[in-house]
Image 1 (cartoon, rainbow, N blue to C red):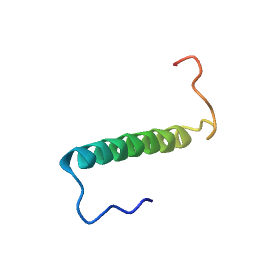
Image 2: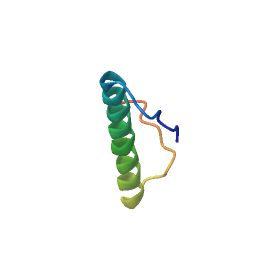
Image 3: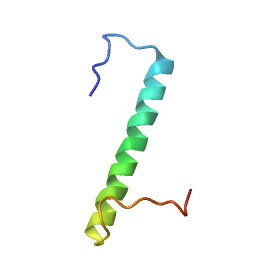
Length: 48
C-alpha cells in the first residue's frame, strides 16, 4: 500500500478515500461470490 505524505490536499484525500471505498466494495463482492461457491477468477463479461 502506498504511503501518504504527511499533509495531503483535501482534493487528494477525497480521491484516495473514494478509490479505497471502491476497492473495499470489490473485495467484499469477491469474498461473497467465493462464499456462494462460485470460482474465484470468473470474469463478468456479459455485465460489462
